[in-house]
Length: 71
Image (cartoon, rainbow, N blue to C red; front, side, top):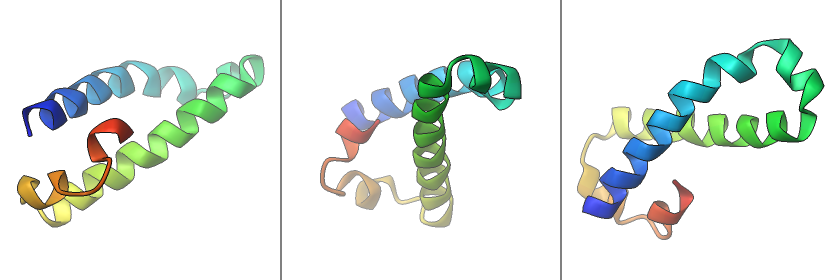
């Protein structure tokens, strides 16, 4: 579970840094491949945060197969 917390925090830190950068249309036009990668991460991040918000029992969330690797 400690690994999961570490990975979630690393992902959150990177997401918070990159979200304002990639939310502007200029970067997406300049770096389309990177913008697509970020869009995938953004979707995963928002879905994960929503899932945690709906059911804050981290034990059940951490039991999902491969969840640590997804972050």
